[in-house]
Each structure stands twice: as C-alpha cells, then as structure tokens.
Length: 189
Image (cartoon, rainbow, N blue to C red; front, side):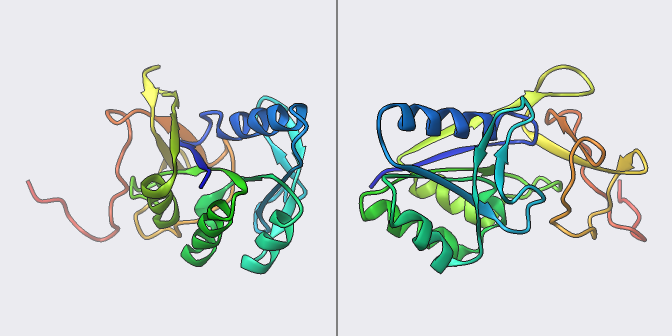
C-alpha cells in the first residue's frame, strides 16, 4: 500500500508539494493523473498559490475516483477534506491495489476541529507530511486557518465548508488563533 498525505493549514503549500510530487513521478516515466472534489472553484486544475498548475479531473464519488485511478500508477488528489469517508476508504482501497496515492488537504476546520476524512488518512497513510504557513499576526508557524467575517472570527455556527481564499481566511499560530464564539452565549469565567 502506498498512501501519502500532505496536510496542514491554508496557505501552507500543500498543493505546491502535491504538484511537485506529481511532476517528479511524471519525470520518472510513471503514468500520473490528478483529481479534486468538483465543488472546488478550479475543478479542472490543481492550482497552487505559487502559480504551479496541474490538470485535474473533477471527482464526484468513488466511481469517478476509480475511473481516474484505473489508468495510472500515481494518483494525486487535492482538497481531500471535502471527500466523504466512503471516498476516503476508496482511496485506501486504490492504494492497497498498488497505485501510489498522494493526497493533500486541510487537517483542521476554522474551529480547530479535525476533518474526519483527513483524520482517518493520518492514521492509515504510510507517510504524513505536515506543513505550516506563517502566522499573519506574529510570524510564528501557523497550523490553524482563521475564518474571518467582516474582519472578525466567524461564529461557531457558520457552515464548516465555505470556499474562499485570503479574503475569508488567514493562517494563524495556536496562540493567535481565535476560537469562534457561539452567538447568544455568555462566557463563564
């Protein structure tokens, strides 16, 4: 089984690392393909903030994942935090069948809670690469993605998935990450 996971906060270089590994495999003569959940805004491409790009097919369920995987030796999958647990198990099965799977995605949501599929991959992957960004407040290593709404932390009741970039999120270290408050509840001291 060959399952690799690249994970960390937003703006930490996960997609850039995924593309680098795909390019290396392609340069070694391996058949390579990539995909990502179709709800992502650039579903036809893996696109890093550094400008690197790699063609990607939209993944809409296990059937689509298997269709892409059946013709390659290396499968790259970006934004795995958007996959269901069934689709995560599908990636594990593909890896068990001898296809090298390189997956990348956020480990924590804006509340600081783990994404279930990525949490599972952390436990089952043969290698896990943890990346950090730079905290926008203090410059320390950032492992959290702070969601902002009008410049303030989004409320805890906000939807878990909200697509966006620097207009909605910024990387924060643990000390600067502000846990979202529940509206209408007073803090106890």
